[in-house]
Structures are given as C-alpha cells and as structure tokens.
Length: 187
Image (cartoon, rainbow, N blue to C red; front, side, top):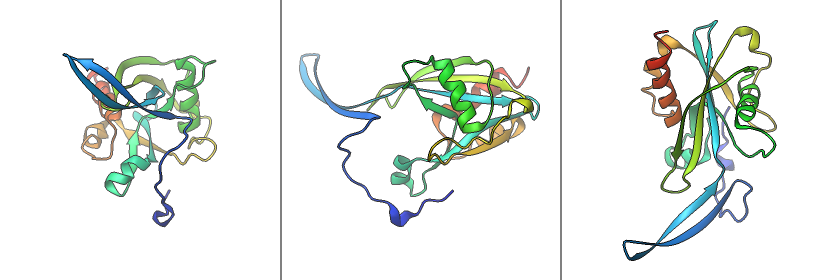
C-alpha cells in the first residue's frame, strides 16, 4: 500500500454522497451565533478478538484528512463502516464490515460504547462493538471491497499496551484497547 504523492489534487467539494456542509445560526444567552457544521453518517466499529491466537484484529488504511496534516495518512483503526443502509440493522452492518475488511464471519456482537465524535464539526455518533472469533471463522482475506485498500493487522494481546503508544491510532481504537485490557484480559 502506497500513495503516489504526485497524484494528489485538492479542490472544493461541490457534491458528496457522504457529507453536506451547512451553517447553523442560533441564539445562546441572547447572543446570535453561527457555526459551520458537517452533516455526516453515523458509524459503527468493532474490536475483533481471535481467541485461538490470543490476538486482536484491526485494520490499517490511508486517511486523506490525516495526510493533509502529517504527510503520511496511514492510520491503525478498528474495522468500521458507515450506518448508511436503511434495510440493515447496525448489528448486520458491523458483521458485514468484519467480513469485508478483516475476513471474519462474526456470529454475535456486544456493544461496548456509543459516543459522539468530531463534536466541533459533525457530531456523528459512533457505536463500538466487540466480538470473539476463532480461526475457523476466518473465511476470506479481508482487505475491503471495490477499490478499498485495507491492510488486516493482527496484534497479540500482550502487545496491546505498547501499541497504544503509537501516534497513528484512532481514539476509538485506543478506547477499545483500554476497554479490552480492563474487562477481558483478566478473564
């Protein structure tokens, strides 16, 4: 996985199927204020624990918005997806993402958290799930669908604490690792 940096072009977003940029006007304590808002889909993510290997399964992928800040853009994160399918439940969507991105057929999920992220701009809600799998549930390579370039990463449980020290992890990954280390590692 590599980005051809000479191919990068930055231009105004005129029409997107993922976000809409709005400006909100409101009165707070008698003062008229305005705020720029990005309306975006909510998302779900999942921490996958392979109990046979005593490891967790995450992904690494390029994020253009991060690239613009650090000239790299590759982030370690939980397997995740947008809640954008009206005919599917959030549980169905996250199980589908686990198969597409990581190659695991997840049977059941447990919600471990729900929070709002990017509260200064979009306020989108993220639901975080946990699932246990075994090696028999690895039925595909993962890596995403269509033109996605997703690297599947397996981290031993005893290496999770050190992994938290990296500077290219997402907050939901950090939260999930800390949740796991507090709630599952001792079990």
